[in-house]
Length: 298
Image 1 (cartoon, rainbow, N blue to C red):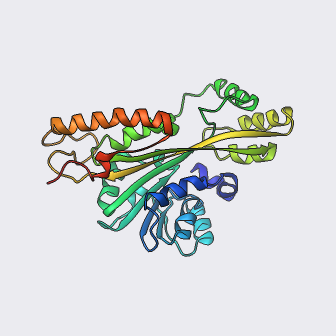
Image 2 (cartoon, rainbow, N blue to C red):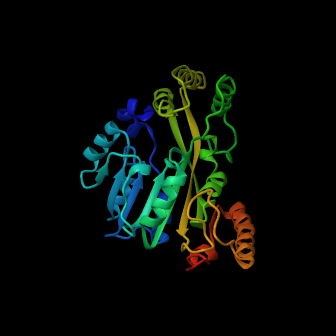
Image 3 (tube, rainbow, N blue to C red):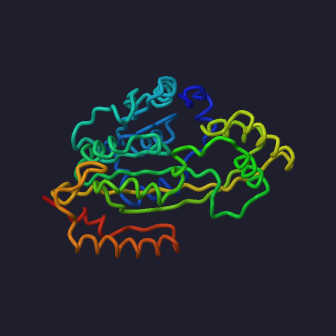
């Protein structure tokens, strides 16, 4: 397992999630002291720690034994489970909040999404977010030009989860089952100054970067003056579970017993168009359809 080999460096190398992300979750009422949270693919605890600080009881799921040991040592108050999200036994209606922080692309959504849907308590939400290392909206810097050259020179095929940093592609995959609707979308932009060793430490945690490629990036920093300013972003999607009924599929790829009504299709299409417009202008959007808890009921 790639991250197991770099477990000791992972926590130090990966930057924390921006304060604005946690502030948005508070504004949305998702960080309720005393609530139960499930952190899927917890890694070194970059989400587990702030969730605990917010007063939630956290169950952290991490399949890597070394990472899980480091996670338990750093956050002894967390209930750490050494298993994959796909294999975790979850009680029904047990969690007020389920999160997947820069981890959803490693999971089998056909297995995980129905589990999460069933595990959410009434009023609970599934929140997915991730860092994007290299903000696509930022002006390209000399260092980012060098990074692009390194990537273009690769002879290997693109990784199968190349969609992982694409927010809209991820949304489509998360909502394809009909189990969840998008309630809120936010994007946070931030910058970080790194020297050569810092770039090396961070880039070695990227599973698609070879050691020789990392060294090329480190050398580029030295040639550019010894430090670079990196412009990164983090996006977050809040998903409301739709009530499962005869008009919703029970799993990804499985047809429903009855199609979604024309009214439902029109409502979702209309709000999607509005949401796309608002997101382009503001970076954030809350859907009244999702906020209502969904249109489909038993």
